[in-house]
Amino acid sequence: MTTLKTLSTMTLIAMATTTAVSAQGTPQVKPPAEKKICRANTETGSILSHRRCHTRAEWTQIDRESGQRNAKEVEQFANTVRRPDGTGFSE
Image (tube, rainbow, N blue to C red):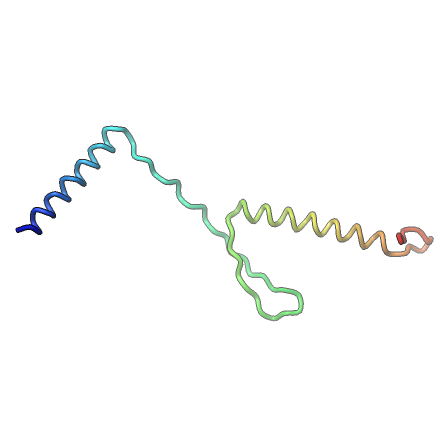
């Protein structure tokens, strides 16, 4: 019988909570989590690849940083290579 009373009490509490949420308007609903996008990444010199999963915004940031890093490396390399006219070599 105590189990029935406990169950009835829990049901009443649940109904009261539902009614309170309905009286306040729409309940606070969490926005859906962003979809993860996975890419296979193989390191140079390795035959094994591994998956990296990030959101679209994270991938955009990673790609932007990677592009900036690559441009900087190309510029540094270009400044260390001697051109046929003897220019372009920095010490």
